[in-house]
Image 1 (cartoon, helix red, strand yellow):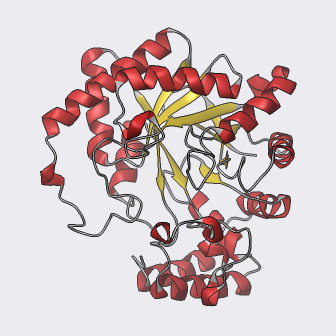
Image 2 (cartoon, helix red, strand yellow):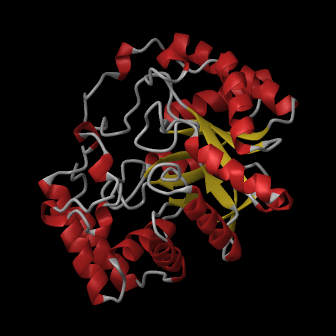
Image 3 (cartoon, helix red, strand yellow):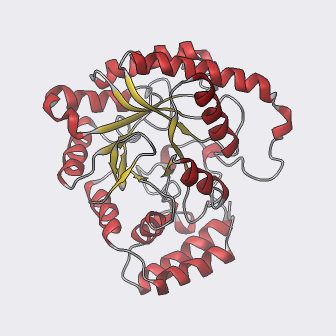
Length: 350
């Protein structure tokens, strides 16, 4: 297993981060336990969760994934030091989470305490904002003028960000969290937090996780360049584009128990004819060179300059082992050239 520094945190994280959002819905406790133990056995030390998991997010599944992790830790407390655990506070919009309200400093303090109880841990290694209070170009909102950046009051949001940082700072001083990160944010969001932390001597952003995969490369080059030079770790989530890049949804297939089969239609914005054409082309490259479609997509993501650790997830041990193997299967120059040719043909298929 290879390891990389998580921004300026001083933490060394595995190049693979195990995402856990299926635990508590698609995966039961015993399966979560098996995944944790296997991941640790192969050198994965980085685990990502969130208060709103499992998915799809509902009032009934809220907090269940953190609880699965906490149940394992309660039985294995001596192994807590082997794990770097990242979790997140939900942004606005979920009626069952703080009445759908925005993230505030007070909300951070409350949410941290609740996550610690579910995790059955004294501290969280990396605490992240799941999405910002303002609308950002994520979750299918990246088309030009899908929304207008000019509609927000930048000064008002900067004041909200300062309040959030102050709440984070209190949690750091109390030893409840070690480091602070972002998710589903932008270059402006990163740099505003960096400016505020320097000006007010508050915790510095050490990482950001955004969607990044062969179907969705909008963060290259500008946001990733900013992360690299500002020493902010870049953590791609959904490197398989919600499972699409496996090819399992080809030709309208909807495998029983798959994420799409239990999701609302509104969450399927990736499901376009162009995306399926691109997936078929990538699958052809994979087949010619001895990769599974998943392995090709993950190996490509791992080799992108500026990527710190790629967040993978699986519902079965077979899937997990296949995905982990991809990180020992670097792409040759020939394969990279063939992948690049497909990417040029389908630069933004959804």
